Amino acid sequence: MLFTGLIILLTILYLIILELSKNIILGWVIGVLAAVAAILTRSSLTKKGQLNLRTQLIIWGAFIGILCINYLMTSPPYKNVPAVDNKNPDVTEVVHVTQGDLTGVYNADHSAKVYAGIPYAKPPVGELRFKEPQAPEAWEGVKACDAFGPMAMQSRGNTLYNSLSHILGWHDYQVKFGDEYLEPMSEDCLYLNVYAPGDAAEEPLPVIFYIHGGSLTTGQSSYTEYRGEDLAKRGVIVVNFAYRLGVFGYYTADDLKEESPNGTTGNYGLLDQIAALNWVRENIAAFGGDPNQITIAGESAGSSSVNAICVSPLTEGMFNYAIAESSGILAHKPFHTFRDYNEATVQGDKVREEFGVNSSQELRDIPAEKLVQTATDQSAMTVDGYAIVEQPYLTYEKGKNHEKALLNGFNAKEADAFNLGIKATADNYEELLAEDLEDYASEMANVVPADSPQRDQHFIVDALGDAKGALNEAYSAIWFSYSHYLWNNYMVEQGKPAYEYYFTKENNMLSNYHAGELPYAYGNLWRHPGLYSDEDYKLSDIMQQYWVNFAKTGDPNGAGLPKWQMRAEGQDKLLQLDTTIKMIDDPNHQLYQVIDKYQNSIK
Image 1 (cartoon, rainbow, N blue to C red):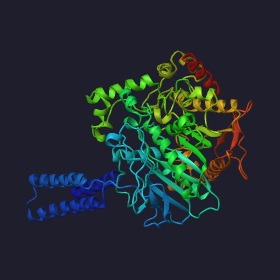
Image 2 (cartoon, rainbow, N blue to C red; image 1 turned 60 degrees about the vertical axis):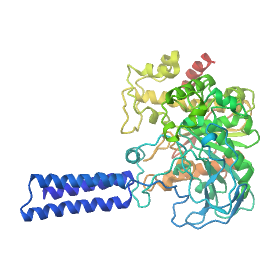
Image 3 (tube, helix red, strand yellow; image 1 turned 135 degrees about the vertical axis):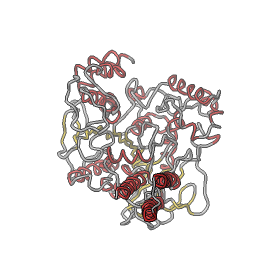
Image 4 (cartoon, helix red, strand yellow; image 1 turned 180 degrees about the vertical axis):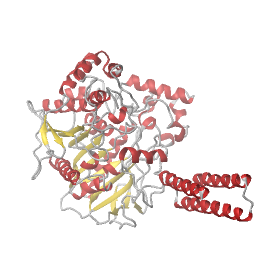
């Protein structure tokens, strides 16, 4: 009985590992059969009197060996993520775009159409690596756009570890059949997705052009939290897409600048975003969208990218409004996702040294799977003289930024997930602040004392420490909300509409951490059954309508919605998004004054 119990226990644990690793169903079958075979073999040997230490070791060895080999042999295949969740979806009518004809698919109730995996540029491979995106090639026949394109090259975590993070961190792991595959990753990644209402509208619809986040090093357009089906139902067209990341998107080198007809280097990911925007302007009318009514939107590094597009001379007149969630690059020296050209080229030099080459041309010969493993920092845009011609704040000071209105804001616990491995104590607190504020760390420590209250939530793997609440509060302002303070102030100075939010709603998933607002604003709470309450769905309904109203008119307000006051001289309150929605004072005003002093000292 002990042997049988151990085999059953090990088999259950093994099946759990197979599930978390997304191994194919055949692996489950083989695992169970191996367990049955081990039990029957031992039983047979016992009856024959042949069971001894040697035969028991053989049984155990064979059982463990089969499980190990099976784990490797039944690993998940790579498969493009389907555009919609319903099986065998109905196909849409044929749509004609510049490159040719295509079809999409309907969601289950035909309330939305999704056209996924549409190429908006040539694959940036071979000689096109480290070059501006090129116009996409035409195709013959009708292209079935029913699955998302591959994610851009990036570091991919272990599948088992990723599943555990969804159990312990996001709390949204679901056991279901049909997900036994991995999303492909490729340098050939320049594809976009269009979400449209199921029924054609009488008039062209406004467009929300969404740029995903991920520190400019990770992310994919298939991510469920910002899919656009639900916003499309409210009368807008939503577009999202993949763009080059990391070393493929932001590697900077003088020899590339010299070979470029535009004298550019270092902003290939940003240029991809602009190419996608240009494709939308040329083709979105075929999907029912209005090319003259585009709102660019993004979160985290996507929000920083929105900020960059607002200052790029390449995008003047290409969009109307901007939605920016949890980032920007308007500090004199932004804390992340932006660097000066010299710093960018130094990191570029390190790439060539790392791979033992002398030129960028030689880097083009290195397999993408190897190049992506670079240990250098390739997570920031730069002033290249083409896509970005000066420090972004200078463009805003001149009033030459392009957005006509701004909806923007931040969350309560922005920095917490980025500080998980740091133990912050009263002893090292100022030292940790000095990493970004230098001589102004002590002043920040006076504003946010080390003994400030701890957060009301924390991740299970957080290193904590008695000053962790203070560190997270300070860095949430330094890294994230400060950029919105600057952005709104510039908009007020220019007399342009700006609306700022503060997302504080707690829940059982992403809560009010970084990116926690995304499934509310884009209508994807339903993808996580049991993790959100009726209050969450009510808030999501209101947020979606704010976003849609803003895309239509540049003003989020509308009938039946709580009044969202516009920023103005003497009106710097922001809208708290929670169970109760109301205008409140920005909780970080004192912190901004310290950060201002630091930024002015290095101007």
